[in-house]
Image (cartoon, rainbow, N blue to C red; front, side, top):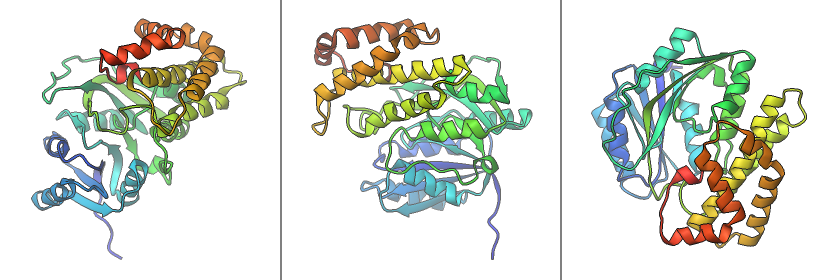
Length: 332
């Protein structure tokens, strides 16, 4: 059997209905200062012009491979990439986002300098195609041993797209199928397996605010997974001797309920859900755990004020829908 050629980094990019943004994403990868990588474009049954664009790039650069598959969702596409990845390390980029030229180089430098299983940088949500680069030079933060598990909560780790993972450490770990917010359980498992994590709070990943992406829009059944996963993590730590961990997990659980209620107020709700039932559930969770939320010093004052608005003055918050079209800042 022929052995696959090894590379340093495998980049997994799921592709679905992002024809308008895909070239910018791939071009930002082609512009990387680090060159020893492979790009796996996972066409998840996209029915626009994106598959043809994927094929076009494979003829232009031998490091790019495309896998065409029936539509199975984001988790399915990422899992397909993990199954076929050849790299010593793996990272994920969404096809409507883009990265700074030093994205890969920085992540790899952090991982190898500290012998870390996971290295992370920061992201910024952008609305323009030419954001200003982050010129800051902050100090990196290193977490080892029991600190790694705490870092998952205290850094509020959600997205996989700003991280570089040691492929060997991931093993057979995969994303849960048929779920949104799938990054949360994936990273929760990773941060309990990893021995060392290093984080550089510098923006090298640009999350483009695509109004048609699955993370935006009105509240629907899929978005309720966010609350489900946050509850699972809270229940995992509930009653443990580590009050700091359980308190942080509780604060994130309350924050998830508040965030989903804010989304429902400001962006509306899918016909498949009953607003009254969702409202009852979100308010119940938040009121039960609100003390942890308000005590959490890492929660911005603006988010706490938003909680007061959407929890106690929900009809007023709904009126704002008529005047403002606001983004994930209010719904995360």
